[in-house]
Length: 220
Ligand code: ATP
Image 1 (cartoon, rainbow, N blue to C red):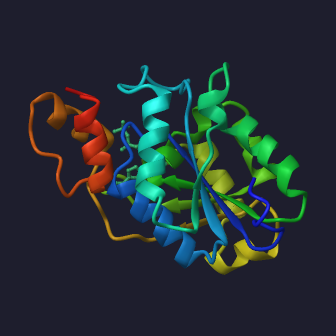
Image 2: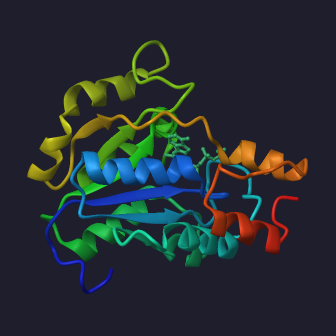
């Protein structure tokens, strides 16, 4: 945690494989910062994600790309802890660590796309996430927060914890809010398969990340 960060203002926590980081991720983080009044957003690339196949690029490269993508935004910082750790990356462990660092009063807001939110019941100790942070859920094309796709145990949490974005600053943890971003149907899966086919990736991710991918011949 940087020493300029202080103890005021909600902190956004945004984890992902970021394989590679793209404009869907960046727009989600920037919209959350603005819509939820966050003091900053901490992006945390996963080391070894437990829920999916091994990433296409190493943690080293994914971290480097996240740093390049966020270098021009003073509200964003990149946390290397999950990549540096030897064990699998679990969000609950990351939130425990961050809570210990920021103290019990500062709001932490875990940022998720709706697809990730729908998968929450498969996460380690998922109901304990609310003891450490709020959750804020962004729309994503192809997924919906209402209707039949919502697992019942998640629907119950949502009903109990649903709050407006401005409520997130009034407590340290425990609420679920949704916010809307410009819908962007960009996914890292699609980017990796375009790269493997030798197709252009321009306008899907920031130019410094494009350069990095071609310099290191990632995903080809
Ligand atoms: P992959 O295609 O490899 O699964 P991804 O593009 O979904 O990757 P992740 O790193 O898995 O990216 O996602 C990290 C977080 O960002 C998740 O909470 C996910 O819901 C969210 N996210 C990713 N892309 C978008 C997008 N285009 N719109 C909204 N949320 C997104």
